[in-house]
Amino acid sequence: QVQLVESGGGLVQPGGSLRLSCAATGSISSSYSMGWHRQAPGKQRELVAVSISGGSTNYADSVKGRFTISRDNAKNTVYLQMNSLKPEDTAVYYCNQRVQDYTYRFYDYWGQGTQVTVSS
Picture (spheres, rainbow, N blue to C red):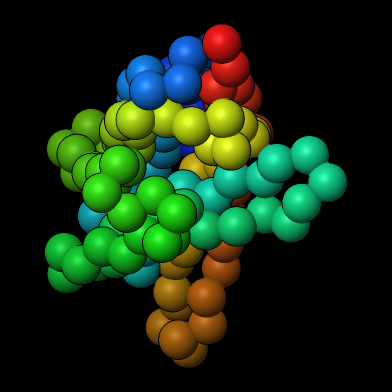
């Protein structure tokens, strides 16, 4: 059973930084992708950043230039470095692991989420 455990959330002032971590119980190197999503109150969950096997990364336009996703396959951990945080970044952040089976079907696994609050 895949388990993803996020950590690193908290309260930070506008302009500050946080680094989120997502530790997986299994290997992440064989995953199709590892990503971070977020959900603000009253809004749908949205993709923030994704690291696809092979090395490419994609970011939501709202976080480009401020957030960086990285992964340590040896530690089975994915990170999200968040700089220049804004109040609109306030949300619950979820780690996602997408795997693909031999039939090319995708399966998504989610962590429990970690709260990020940007406020003065």
